[in-house]
Length: 391
Image (cartoon, rainbow, N blue to C red; front, side, top):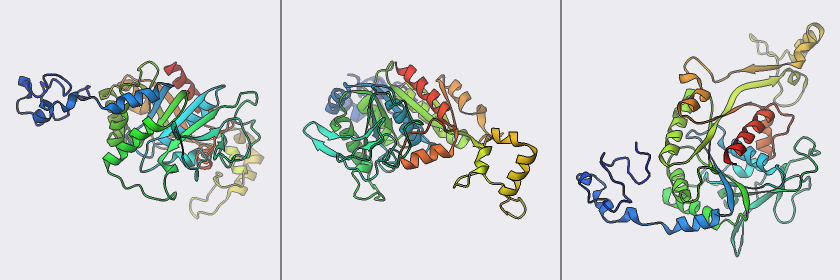
């Protein structure tokens, strides 16, 4: 597979590239199924949309794509929490663009379900989530950084002395007639909307634009790569690749890494999501949904309270510990897992995020992961590495 985007996968070995003046005419073009198309000069035409995208993206300092190749590994979770964390930095201006046309999760994960896109003379206006604010939704349709369900006092999410910052969000989810409406579109219509997102959304000046993508390496990814090829800088922009530890996920993530290589998108690093299940023993003492319980293996009877009393009497120190289980790692995992995969592709390994019910709750209620959560330190370490890699 060639690393050049102007050489089709089914081209002859001696292909000079569709953008070459000799395309379709060189001796190596004989017998190629693309010869007639290349000779017509189609490959040398410059899409005018590239200039439009470049003009709009000129106000964005850093573009960070969140990719995977596999569905269900936590791309939207990673993108949402990355955007929340970046926007919490003092003075940071952050945008989050959701190009998952058929499965937009960003409105839910940002606490913006039910909001609509507004138009102005300068284009589409993003829906905004305001950081470091505990106010209810205002009349402009914006939400607080903690989401519409945020009822914390602010101490667990950020420093009170940080200046207010804003996180702008754009998604097809804001345009659907109802939340459960299916988007049944073919490639050209998806590509047209992605182009419109990149040319018509008025982000203003941004420090970071995070782009959440669907799984795979198909229409949406090709469109993003083509439209951004004149805008991405290998020193200041790049992609975060998300995977889970099982081979079924990594097999597709390897394809995504090869995709990035082919279209010349720099990989900022690999995030290992759902790296293991970590549950504090104190969860046994919490009578809330999602708490850990002791079940009788033979009968299925809940014996939690009985076992708590025995543990408190004989070994109370256990309640200062957490239980950790590597759920996905097995002997069948090739090459040792995501860290080794990153090494094989010569890209950074950004870190591992454990399964954490607080992370699930944060995403489903549209707020930033609280600092007290088990996954918080790991997430912030990953975000810091991303920041360092683009600055």
